[in-house]
Structures are given as C-alpha cells and as structure tokens.
Image 1 (cartoon, rainbow, N blue to C red):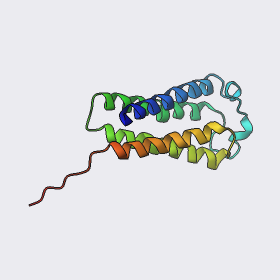
Image 2: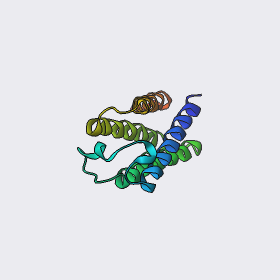
Image 3: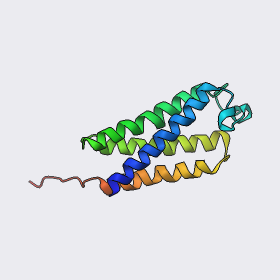
Image 4: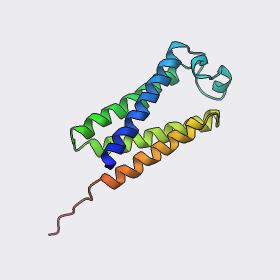
Length: 132
C-alpha cells in the first residue's frame, strides 16, 4: 500500500514540476504561473529560465526515474526515493528562503516531501548484520 502511495506522490511531484518548469521556460518572466520578476530580486536568477530547467531536472525527472526503479523493484529504489524526498524538501526550503511564502502549494509540496521520506523509511528493509 505504501509503495502505491509513494508512486502517487512521485508522480504528483513530477507532473507539477513539468507543468511549472515548462511554463517558466515558455515565458521567462513568470506570467503563466502568476509570478513576477520582483520575486527573483534576492536570487541569483535574472529570469525564470534556469529555475524552470532546474525544476524539470530535479523535481520532474528524478521522481520519474524513481518510479521506474520502484516498479522494477530495483535495489536502487530506496536511495532514489530518499533522494527525491530530500531534493523536494531542499528545493522548497531554498525557495522559501529566497522568495518567501507566496502560495499554499509551497506548504503542500513540503508535506509531500516529508511524506515521501516517511513512507520510504517505513518501506525500507532493515539492514541485516551478519553475526559471526
């Protein structure tokens, strides 16, 4: 059950990141997503192109790769799932630090990142240490 929830959270994250990233790339001034250039004043970015590309890469592609690894029951799935949760929470933390709170989706995505980490820890098999 938790495996399905994790896949759902990963897909939710990836779809949102692709929509947001593509919107930023299509209009680097942020208009399609209701963002202004003023929000970038305290960031290293002159427009929304780099954040859009990074959003697609970090929170779009990484969760999709994670879903594939989970579905294939790869031994890398747990690590990818942890990376996805950490990346999402780090992204949101950085966003809040640079531009501040601007929309409820920021809180939603922080919760999604926390849930990914929580369910990943629940699903991870405990390490077995051989006794000699």
